[in-house]
Length: 113
Image (tube, rainbow, N blue to C red; front, side, top):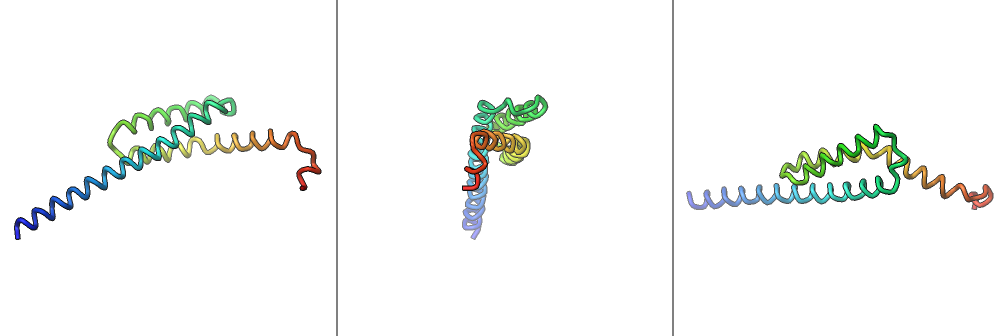
């Protein structure tokens, strides 16, 4: 009876460790996608940002990269969410810029078709 209980406890501990490892891997993967997308956007369109916005994004980006080297998945998730929030306005500026460039060569008649 005691042996079965010990085996169950060890099994539960292992399952918890596996879940923590999985959450860490998933949070790092998501963070890496956001980091890459942000860096690409900055490389291509940082001229759309004011200095304050640019500084905030770079600061959060650096914190997220550092967090990915650690093992606290909650910090990674929180900073990924923060970077998403920090770049929302930037994404809108990129889309607006693209739309403006696309539409600047169209005639009004072409827009109705």
